[in-house]
Image (tube, rainbow, N blue to C red):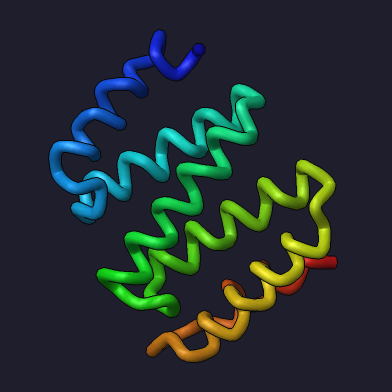
Length: 117
């Protein structure tokens, strides 16, 4: 497994020791998910993105900026995997969430809209 060669095993072990929901650990798991996605390990990337979203939602809320960013990353992964219905659902969640953010900008909302087209 490529994750083991890249030190991913240490990240996952540290996450388990800290309960996996520490914000710093969630950020690192999100970074690992992005790397795995780039390496083509989509199933593992998806699992990690979903864990990060669950943890961020529990700690920060579903409309918090980092939660929305992770949802957008997962939506992009779904899009690349051909799971367009799931990608669209997540992109729409991101759009709704971004509209509720204080100081939300039209640029970030338009970026999310363009991604789902």
